Amino acid sequence: MTQLLSYEIENYRSFYTRQLLSLGNTEDRSVTALFGANSGGKSNTAKALLLIQTMISNSAAANWTLPYQPFLLKDGADGEPTFFKLSFIADEQYYTYEFGYDSESIVFEELKEQSRNTRKMKTVFSRSSDGTINSSAVKSGFGASVAKKTRKETLLITKAREDNNEYANTVFELMDSI
Image (cartoon, rainbow, N blue to C red):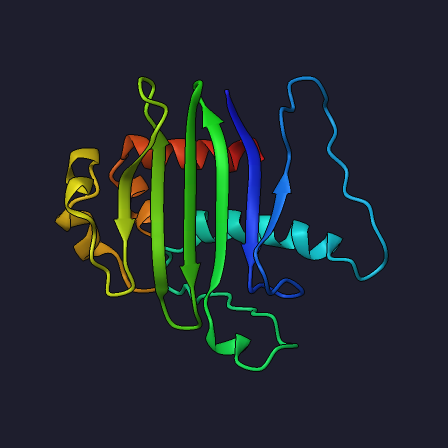
């Protein structure tokens, strides 16, 4: 079973500073509801989750352009990256996946997995703004060949899915469960 525990939004539409939406343990309930004042960000919270799904699923498409929609009520925010972070459980394993992008490229992408023994988070892969992948990523199937096939506006996780990467499949299972 795959379950979204929380997600974070930064510099997207009505959110400038990082905001956390914690969904907690959903085994005891079947409905999660957002409520609040008009113009409080409820719709943008839902739009952010839909955008995350869209980016993960479609960023490798030939005609893909980044859907950059930064916070516009602060000078300079339109030049800063948008960030999203997902925390989730898949098959009793805890993960975090996050990425950031601007109008032209993915500036950061990282998948972490919690060690079953030490409970510390270990980096499965990390991608920097110049497309460089951390050296240990090859052990998880995120080596130079996947990086080379990944355009600057495409998420590495999306390209890795084309190679049936087990970690990419886990993130896609999360998208299917939402």
